[in-house]
Image (cartoon, rainbow, N blue to C red):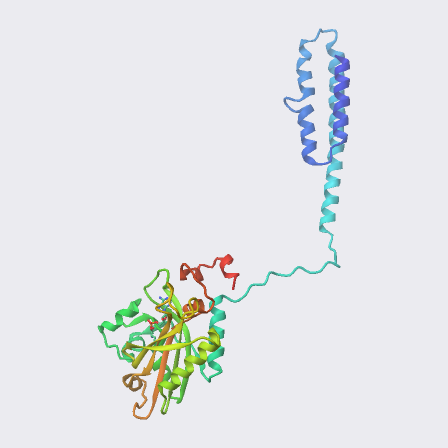
Length: 339
Ligand code: FA5
């Protein structure tokens, strides 16, 4: 029995001597002195020993217990020292190490497109303006020759705040606002947010349009076509072609839809396009009623206007065959980092 006790002491002290962190220390304590520990188990059996042996072995066991406790205490001091040394090393500052760079983000693809569109039109003398995202019925519809209850308004699927206040459904609402400034000629590009009650794979409830308005004496359709050709060559590439297709808007006369040749099939016709052409947006010569609403004499002045979607033209340029246009605003970094 005595031999077993001495063996146990040797084993415990050797193990405790190798302890280097708090977890190992705690494991050793539990192994020998814990409720089910080896020494505790021995002390429990003391009562079964013959009375003559009990005092001597009891004393020896208690002495060993004290020695183990002392060894554990010393080991605890040692592990604390090791831990603080390690921490000290971690806290050391290497002043020669190069600095860490903050990860650099970039502008959202729509902002990039807006800046580029602004740059291209500024080369032709167009200045950028922005008009409110919340608009009166007058600027959004009535001044544009769309009286109350006119069915043409349905196209704009408008969010009404009150019967007279709407979320701007198109940048054309900036036309009469610009005319009211009273400065001629006008050569504005209104790049702003628009809202419509539309949300599907090719429609966003919030999107951007860029609205060109040129008003001067003797402005002609030839100039309108020249501006579109310039934009298309700059934005889409010199080989691209634009065509005007007759259409109807209440605020332009004549009115057109503007198409660009399809880059995917090179104008031959494919599933993506309409017989080789893809629609860019609307355009036309400013209606005399609109000029009058803006205080401009249609006998003296004429002009053209166009309104195209920023997200749509960007998709056309980058040949992005997005399964869903709403991805642009999902803010998924895996998508956005590609632009
Ligand atoms: C208009 O909004 C007219 N104001 C354009 C105009 C201006 C005509 C000046 C004549 C003179 P339309 O509703 O077709 O037209 O919209 C023009 C373009 O905006 C579309 O071709 C498309 O590129 C974009 N667009 C319209 N609705 C959405 C939408 N919900 N999501 C994304 N883009 C849209």
